[in-house]
Image (tube, rainbow, N blue to C red; front, side, top):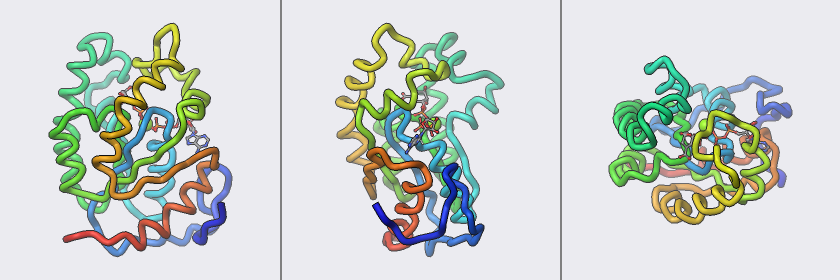
Length: 197
Ligand SMILES: Nc1ncnc2c1ncn2[C@@H]1O[C@H](COP(=O)(O)OP(=O)(O)O)[C@@H](O)[C@H]1O
Ligand SMILES: O=C(O)C1=C[C@@H](OP(=O)(O)O)[C@@H](O)[C@H](O)C1
Ligand SMILES: [Mg+2]
């Protein structure tokens, strides 16, 4: 796919560091499954849009001083979700940021409300097979530490797809596009997007 916009290198970094700020300062939220590219694409988008980048999982890890996988080990998914909701409530109030959420942040109804009411939500979509290729070897995704992670991804995607769609202001199919290409295509869509103040 050919998209107009700044030239980017393969790592998603701009060849030409010209920044293109958005005409609004509502936070930009990235949602989608594990491996959709929220963290990677979010970081690159923030650089080009001259916004601060916040990754909800990294912020949680920085505050707790432990990896997400250890929070799951000690407190279970329930404990992790409580911490995630508290942090999302705080971070989603910040204007002018790009916020990469964790894949399950759309599960709690109050989280979906924060996302819908407070910012522009981009759903990064990818097939279960593509998601699996990207995250299969990552040990810091506790929900995939099962005997059959591929089936788990299929099941989670089926369960969550309607929730991602519910919160999305924009849905973007990453298909097999490289990170740099996704970013290049997203910028004009975000520039044209209209938001209520
Ligand atoms: N469009 C893409 N094409 C190829 N690899 C990708 C793409 N998006 C992300 N990746 C890779 O997939 C892995 C997971 O990406 P990440 O940004 O951590 O996803 P998320 O935060 O949505 O779980 C990383 O190694 C990243 O480089
Ligand atoms: O899908 C999920 O429920 C989760 C996704 C992870 O984030 P990424 O989507 O960034 O991998 C992380 O929040 C945690 O492991 C739970
Ligand atoms: Mg991530």
